[in-house]
Amino acid sequence: MIFDTHAHYDDEQFDEDREALLASMQENGIGTLVNVCASVHGLQNTVDLMDRYPFVYGAIGVHPDDAGEMTEETLDTIRRLSDHEKAVAIGEIGLDYYWHKEEAEHEVQKRMFRAQMDIAREKKLPFIIHSRDAAEDTLKIVKEYMQGGMYGGIIHCFSYSKEIAAQYLDMGLYLGIGGVVTFKNAKKLKEVVEMAPLSQILLETDCPYMSPEPYRGKRNSSLNLPYVAAKIAELKGITPEEVVQTTEENARKLFGIE
Ligand SMILES: [Zn+2]
Image (tube, rainbow, N blue to C red):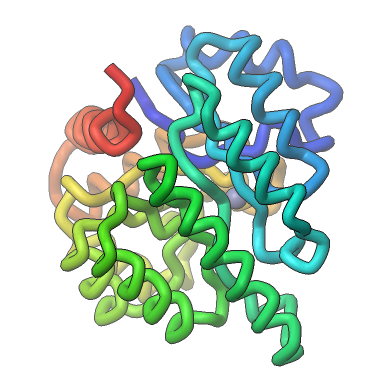
């Protein structure tokens, strides 16, 4: 069954039909999903979803967009919530220089990225990274941490070149692949998917964002992942079933879910 390694079902775009939608997952082939925290004030929402649905796991962390709002107390909350038995990763964390252009903001983002990488190491959990227009700084920090020993990780919504992908793959990390791979203009990402071993690829939605074709621009959900699996299968010359099965095994292994 499909394993969605990156979803945001606590987003307000799901307020109207969250319950019905999540109830329909398993009968539609979505076996497991990880709900990923993003905002400072949304941390508890992921815990509520994990408590409520047996097939929902969680990643605890704060997105770089919110780095400026983080305090010592936020870091303590992340530490505490990541002790939950269904918390399987620290994320999403990282750097976003696309929406934040000021040097001072970059410094705050780097500090909070490192602080959360420290928590991943302390709690022996994998990390989930968001990185946009910050290829060099992200790679530098990840390399530094990997040399000191980490417990695996994902570069979510991978958007950089084949050369940068190769460096993450060499470190044993996973690439999260979602709707973008189905876009006509996603030439770079298609090359990355052709090159990366299937054993280091994970399926993800980033829902409500990043709907695959033919639903580009609409609200996304895990139910659209068959389109992503089909595109990866086409690029690699294998069956969609093989993509679903191997990426599920990859996710279970990384997150330590039986
Ligand atoms: Zn996300």
